[in-house]
Amino acid sequence: MQFKWVDYCEKYEAELETWTDRDTMCYALDESIKQDHLYYLSESDYIHNETYFCKVGLEDEKIIAVLFLLSGEKYPLAINPIIVNPALRNKGYCVRVIRELIEHTERIVGHEKYVFDAGIELDNIASVRAFEKVGFSLTDKHPAGDFGYFHYQKEAPPEMEAHIKEIWAIYAQDLAKINQDLLSD
Image 1 (cartoon, rainbow, N blue to C red):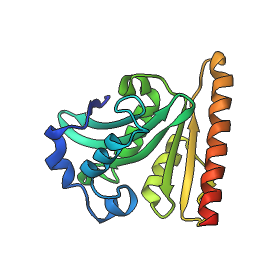
Image 2 (cartoon, rainbow, N blue to C red):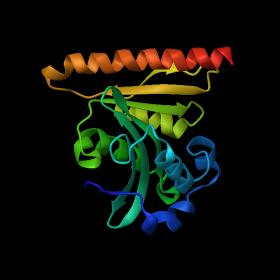
Image 3 (cartoon, rainbow, N blue to C red):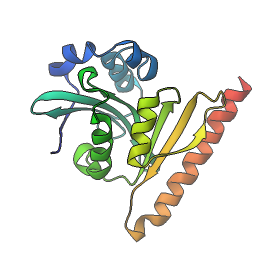
């Protein structure tokens, strides 16, 4: 069964704000779901439902998860973060959400993506395991060693091969620059 995906909106706000427990705040959010959403909406680098998405996953109208996604033509679809309903954690929902995002990207965000990225705190064992179970691989670490960059590439038509190589090359350059900047601070 597929989840129904809708844009984050006021209708879901009150329930989602109850999800900001210690683990969620530690691993996923800077402030709260609403505040992080408002941050992305206020940033000129992100265009709502083009390069930034905040999607709510529903199953029988029950909120299952929230996805923050960042995208761009020459970048992977960055999953940043997935927040699963606290009542459903450790029951396989995160894996289902990730799989559905990969298999039905176009339905969820309006365009196809073949390359995915997730930044995960390495001591967030449940999240690391969920992404690895779906096929993501740890490809790099933050210079401090506490944060990992996980990548996944799904099968793509042959005509997309050059574009995908370009995405990975640009991403690798950007990541190297970010890590170099962090080391020089």
